[in-house]
Length: 74
Image (cartoon, rainbow, N blue to C red; front, side, top):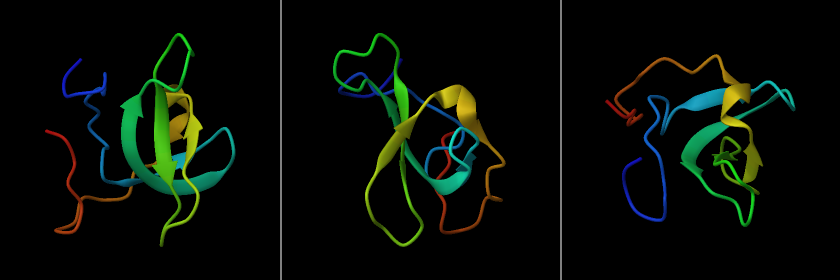
């Protein structure tokens, strides 16, 4: 675990990914706690902005390729 607020590193941070639980795509913003849930969740935001949502990190798939505009964790 690294960072503040109990955020965790993830190799797809900053990249658009698929949430296979909902079928939606969004940019992975963080892996962090959500209230009193016992495990961290993935925080995503839709392309172009909008309402953030959470999902199980295991539901993340199909990351977009790395581009100069993405900032994946190393």
